[in-house]
Length: 118
Image (cartoon, rainbow, N blue to C red; front, side, top):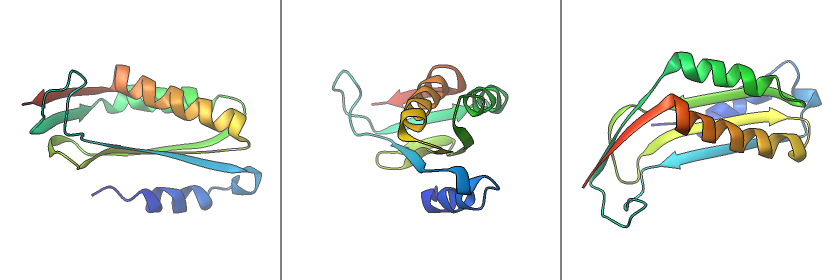
C-alpha cells in the first residue's frame, strides 16, 4: 500500500524545506470504468524506472522545485487500489502546480505501461 503521508514527511526532512512554501501531491487509483465507459475488473501496470528517473531530473531542474518523489505499485491491481503517489515540494504554487501536472503527464505518457481488463 502506498503511504502518501510518508512521502510528505520525507519532503519535510529535505535540506531545503525552509525554502518551500508548498507541497503538492497526486494519488492515482484504479477507477471502475475505462475512459470509454466500460467496467474495469483490474489493471496491469508497470513503470520504467530509468525513464522516470530522467523525468524526475527534468522536473527538479524547473524554477522553484526542490524535491520530486514518486512511489508506485506494479502488477495486477483491483479497482480502488493505489497506482502511484507523487509529491513535489517547491517555493510557490505558480511553480509547483505546473510541475506536478507536467510530471504526472510525462510519467503516464512515457514512464508507465498499463492494460485494462474488463
